[in-house]
Length: 152
Length: 99
Image (cartoon, rainbow over all chains, first blue to last red; front, top):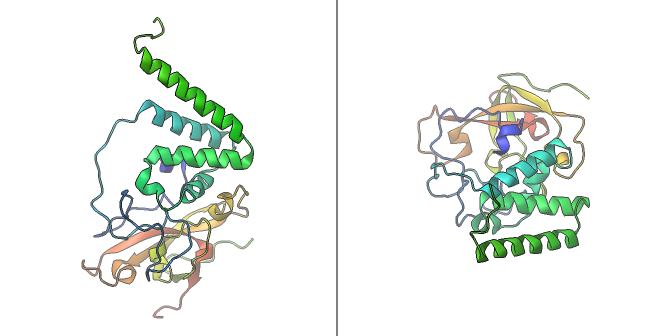
């Protein structure tokens, strides 16, 4: 999804021919390794190509409403020049070695977005904590009486 | 600001640097030899923009062609197999042909 509104290097043409496929699959992959096997220090998620991995899962899936909302939030933040895609990427890298194993694609996005907005002072920890609790309460209420939907 | 340093067909090497922080150069290309295909664009530097700075002056981005055998010593495919990677100019250094 990032490539939809990123200008580079995603313009790059696909490999002329490639037996190896860039590793994007969540799995037991080291966070970041240089070709020689040592720590490379550079952010991990851009540097996974060629590391051992299983087959690439190509199946399409429907996005959940919350995932679409995350995408919309990011697009707005970028359009309003509050943050950049490069900051999003850096924020994902800074989630740490386990993030790719433990979090889904849009979970990584929203965690990165939250951290970047905290860093920039757009939101405060208290505001975020309060909003998360309020969202949890709304969900609990909706699950308690699922038939209570607004009239059409 | 000087213009783009390279020309299509020119032999280059990706710098073998492994800094902390955000960068877009895949590790498997670092220190490897390739050839300039063409100029993709001139863009604000993502290594600066990742930290909230403007990343100006903008940096040329080149498409660089690598032989798979150059990138992967144990590559088992045909010798003609190549891969094209977009790389920001500060990561590239010119290489004498045949070097």
